[in-house]
Image (tube, rainbow, N blue to C red):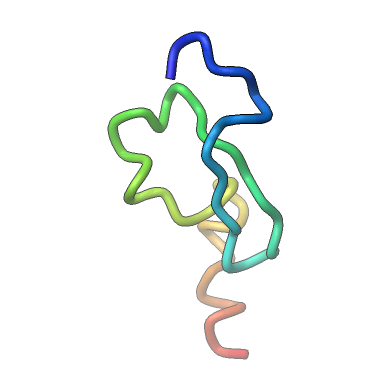
Length: 51
């Protein structure tokens, strides 16, 4: 992804808050496994899964 403009980076939608979030360098090797936009959403996933 080196040299790619931010507007062209892949995006996903967070299942907890519904926001779109973009690819980050720290997720380079695990992008397929990333599901949540933040640690907060990751921790609160159980609260929203029951609704």
